[in-house]
Length: 157
Image (cartoon, rainbow, N blue to C red):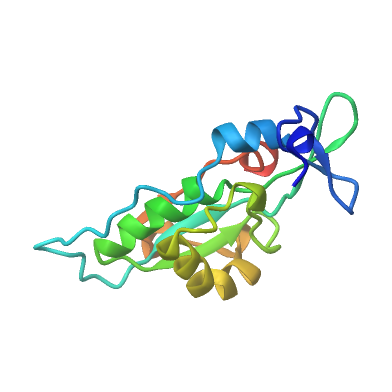
């Protein structure tokens, strides 16, 4: 890889015209493996109510200069807490405002973290076909509501 490109502070343009953060920022701010460690609990949740994970289905954020920033929920801010919830015995339902597929900031995905990769694979079908928030008639069916972070959450959550 070109060392000048690797340290570039210019955002990276994608094939769809959107932008990722610069290689310099990605190098400084993104981890390939999280610090997650599986937790063993003496007492786990044994109920039947899942946690409602409310995600964004927005993947493009328009910036002040009218360029589009590739966004979504931050994968670490979403998937690592879900790993801990799962360790404690919880299951999940995923919902988005419009019922569109939940989006992740894939430029921030910790590609070398087996636990995160596996959970993402396990919930991918739910992420691709989430519930629509307006179709949820009662929150009594849920043990908790979790709203993960990420730039996309600022747009439609």
